[in-house]
Amino acid sequence: LATVTAAATAERALRADARRNLDAILEAAAAAFAEKGSDACVADIAQRAGVGQATIFRRFKTKADLITAVVDRKLARLEEEAEAASTHKRAWDGLREFMQTATELHMRDRGLFEAAQDQVIGDEHLMARKARLLDIVGELVARAKREGDLRKDIVAEDIPVLVCGAAQSGVMLRDAGDEAWRRYLQISLDGLRADGGRCRLHAR
Amino acid sequence: LATVTAAATAERALRADARRNLDAILEAAAAAFAEKGSDACVADIAQRAGVGQATIFRRFKTKADLITAVVDRKLARLEEEAEAASTHKRAWDGLREFMQTATELHMRDRGLFEAAQDQVIGDEHLMARKARLLDIVGELVARAKREGDLRKDIVAEDIPVLVCGAAQSGVMLRDAGDEAWRRYLQISLDGLRADGGRCRLHAR
DNA sequence: ACCTGAACACCGTTCAAGT
DNA sequence: ACCTGAACACCGTTCAAGT
Image (cartoon, rainbow over all chains, first blue to last red; front, side, top):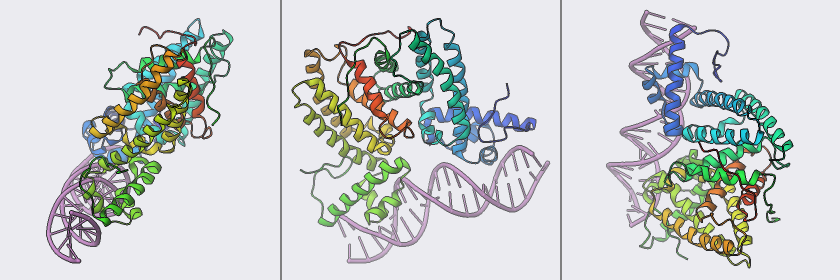
């Protein structure tokens, strides 16, 4: 599987040492951003990867592009998870599993996604990935509706939003134990059920 | 009402010019952070406030402390809203109104809260404010449970978490119209109802 | 082609000198 | 006490020189 990095050099093959350096950079960057968010500094990443700073900027025009590339890889992973979840007999079970897995992944790399948020919109590669991910989730959503488990007014786009909400909850409560996000994902799932109660928001 | 600023000089009165400068700084900072998050630079804030940079650092040991002070003011505002919402005859209506207002405020100052997130924990003033806010919300929650509208397993701490989740949703979807967050707050509210459906999360 | 140390620019923070 | 312009340190980005 040829890993496509978002910003740079999608096509032509790299020289062996360059390839090795690129991998090392991506790995070091993933770890650094997950831990420190966008505060992680390029000098640190370069050192962890065993390269000079300028080498990083040769592959990625900017630090933001580096973040984008790392996020791109994580989204690829999510796509796989969505496909795996689609094999459930009952679509609702798949949806539930995917939302749970996605939240877990999101939590593990919280710093990264926090840093990425501003940049996701407007990046071509990431938008394409997002679209593909939404397609897979959309099928799951449609099937769950047909099977009578999911509210009719829910759309594919709702799912990642709810996942991010739950992950956000988890971040807010990192003092309340590492598993607090489950509680909030649960509340969302309750809200998604076709057989659940309803209430309207204030008009204004 | 003497406004207490988090990091600095809670006690002694300030000289007239200092007081004026402090107010200008806080106002400029609120606008700047709301717009650009923590990317807003001190030089800009100083210029907008019409003071030298060093004047800011005289009042606030650090840029982070300045953010904290601005957040502190926003939380004070939220406290007022919670008290206003408590006057509803039916507690559920108050809870719903508060969650909606809180989400709106959160959205308006998204950059600020994004920047603050890391620092809220560990700051004395902010923790005290949070506790007081939770007290007020807690009463509302207890009453809504007694009146049979709210799930028995919900606690006060759940409310701000759900609000942040909804606001987060709004940020994620700023291309889908500015009112998208209502939809996700709605889903949460559905999940909170005592008469709603239930479903369990995957065991692992 | 690719790699790098050194230079540059920007921004948070501090300091010496002023009222 | 309070204010400030100038200096300092740090970090993203670029460049000139090396293989």
